[in-house]
Length: 331
Image 1 (cartoon, rainbow, N blue to C red):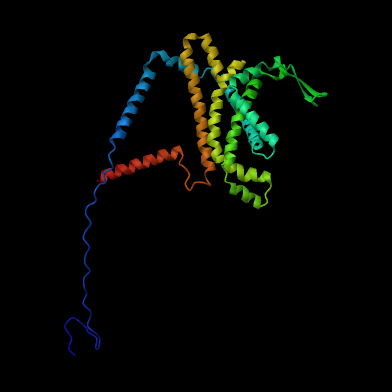
Image 2: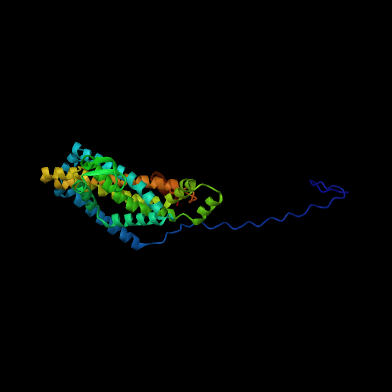
């Protein structure tokens, strides 16, 4: 059997099959840049807002009436800081007592006992109707109505007797008045948070045979906090600002110190008011930051992805700008 030169063919084997080349797919067209949708209205509104903000800032900085040098002088004065400390003390005590009272009132409001429901409703109705300044002035002059307070059998002998004038210090009057008022509003906030919990959670906890106290402390209340926190923080911010009214019961808080210094130095009234404004802005900003992290903590079981923190937003924005710059450079 003859063989072709250079090709070995085995005896009895079939000739090799012809190799058909595969078609080469055409090359994709060059990448084209996708232009974003133009939104001229958004740019116009942005420009208008920037112009207004620039004018406001320019007016604040250049207007000599604000006396920014006196503002810097008064901002960290010991008198102002002492008033700020009083404001923080009154806010802390009133917030804790008001929240505890609000929880008790909310539980009484949703309880099956008709007497507790009625008392809770009347209390909430009364203190939500009366202005806070009236409550504070009434408590400040409470000793004129009741000189002594006693604890004992109704219409019978008294076991303990207290001198109201000794108990009713300026701090006590301020804390009690703010706490009574705060409890009325906090009760509605807590009640709304408790009612927001799905009824199936109560049924599931009851089906497991859990005690009522454990159901509330470990199942119902933690879920209610997710909707309760934003509303109560609004109340807490309002409480920080409401402490300015304790000046009318002779307690020198932040606003009271500013008013006292303003009457002594009438030429510095405007910078002193700016000092009070700046400190209230700082306090409410700190409360807002705490609110963000508390909400983020209690949203872990409800959201697949937690909202980014401010630092994460800044870092994400910088990374997006770098990526966009690289794309612009590549094109």
